[in-house]
Image 1 (cartoon, rainbow, N blue to C red):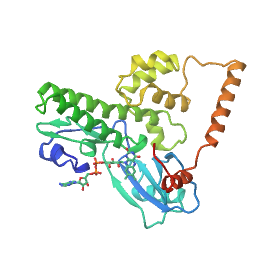
Image 2: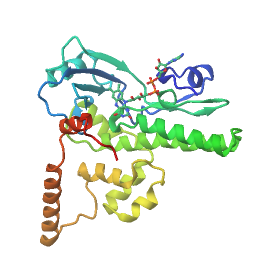
Image 3: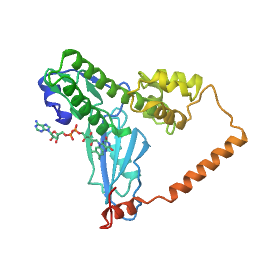
Image 4: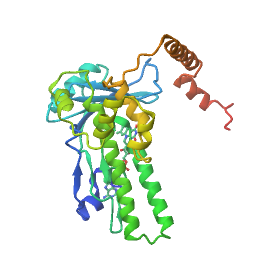
Length: 294
Ligand SMILES: Cc1cc2nc3c(=O)[nH]c(=O)nc-3n(C[C@H](O)[C@H](O)[C@H](O)COP(=O)(O)OP(=O)(O)OC[C@H]3O[C@@H](n4cnc5c(N)ncnc54)[C@H](O)[C@@H]3O)c2cc1C
């Protein structure tokens, strides 16, 4: 197993498997990373992804630390300007505590070659816009374990071919889903975002978008348009398409009774959420000597 990260010592270097670039969809190739020690900021139970001039920024919550990273395209902004924008928008980051990471988006053409199987970043990489890296590792590891078990540890060429087809498709599905994030983000009119809206290659997401534009949210679409192994499913696509207000041909003007039902439902859920624990309370409860599991 090649789990050597970006270095891809065996799959990429020793075996020279060609790299399939995702650069026609994913323009970002660098990140400037920095954060600060938490003081009184509430610990969010979610990760924020925020639009930036030439890409986007994450905010990842740690108990005592807030981690922020600006993922950007070096074709649209210099390292220095990206760093300056990151610090301007996050004044708590100490200026001398940032670092730039370079990456290329894509995957190797074949993930299992001869007796080598690439896992994780050694097999491919996409920016963490949907925090998919660990899930990909899980899918790769479990499908490898299944393949070895099914073949009594003597994998056949057809089984290896199937493994490659399944796992390369899983990588491409992520690229296609991320395409929707770039194509329909209308927040900023910077050169990066104009280019993203005009030129991002949609690949298999195009068929889903075309269907949505004609038909709007549809119950049938999920089953028919997407492969059952697609990790985002139609719900994921709808969250992006509806959430980004992508216009479609079947707008629904809900009658007052339905609007009232929806209002009450939102109110009920908001009230229910208020009864939940904060992250701080949950951490305290977890560490309490009185905690009993199960
Ligand atoms: C701040 C941050 C937040 C993240 N958040 C998320 C998230 O929310 N969700 C998510 O899914 N992912 C997230 N990720 C990404 C995820 O953590 C990484 O993609 C994942 O850890 C990659 O694992 P890997 O094993 O493929 O590679 P790596 O973690 O890079 O491991 C490769 C290892 O191989 C070793 N190595 C290389 N060459 C050799 C050699 N020749 N001999 C021996 N050892 C070698 C390296 O030293 C390294 O230890 C985040 C990453 C960061 C930095």
